[in-house]
Image (cartoon, rainbow, N blue to C red):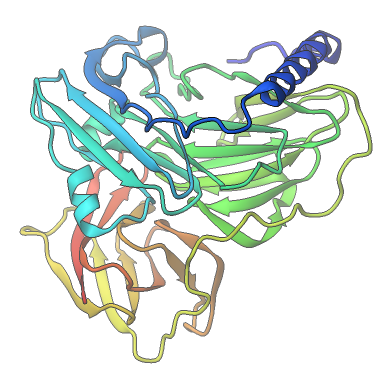
Length: 417
């Protein structure tokens, strides 16, 4: 299923209006009082979970929607600022939320994830510690797959280096016609805009239970963040390809042509599925070359000492053990090496709460130069990750099978002061 690609002539008509709007904003800012009072604290953002349907996208089955929309609203906050939510529940079952990838103190994480009973409203408030692309969703996999989810964008403290910045929140629903349905921001193959001969920031969120192989068909694209955390050295995507595990995110700086659109596709064993289109807008100029500047780093350790690390293993099989086992205790400041041993014939996606982790090399003598909170583990494979424990509390590790999102392993680990 595709949508027509707008011509450059069509989209250029909007450029002058955009320029005039920007000039008007600048004049208004110049006329503002020099000693304006500090703005009042913003009112909590309302998130209302309620039943709904989207037959044109998700078939005739019932969904659980935030604010009646697919997906839920994009929550935006500046790094270091507070995010305040009022979560109401009009479903017939309790709802609790996970803010995937967001580093929180244990008490704040517990408060944010507390169950909201049917007919009740709860307040959630926390400080956005890291800038990056994250997402919120129901902790129940069934509710999350029924669309109770949305993006959370924590913006860098300063001004953005990108003239355009887009979230691409990818969901999926079982096909009724034999063709998989992958709406982006609630639309089929939406058209986005970015600066001609420039770069746009694309924030991909894989809210599906499927491992996605994406390809950007256009000029060079560079990975600038993985799972919300900036990469120290942005790297070019080979042939424009990037893979996203279920629950994973990637920020990409996509270079645009001066006229032709960039096509974003999901690669499959059959024909590719068009995911979105990015059309260049505005006057053309010299195109940028080479990788973009790195994003400002968040406060993560530069080194992870492995010599005296706590070494534990999470076996991943058909069913999670009951009761949920503990992987052990570790003191603040000590490192953890976690072996994710997948015995299944399918790949799994493992979410590690509390601490971003590095993928270790085969001999544990180094690690990949980016962080994960959602770790892809291929079939019949063991993957090792490492992190430095710095936040006291009891944290979860959950493995979900690729394809259907079934929970196939779960455990906890405890960080003590």
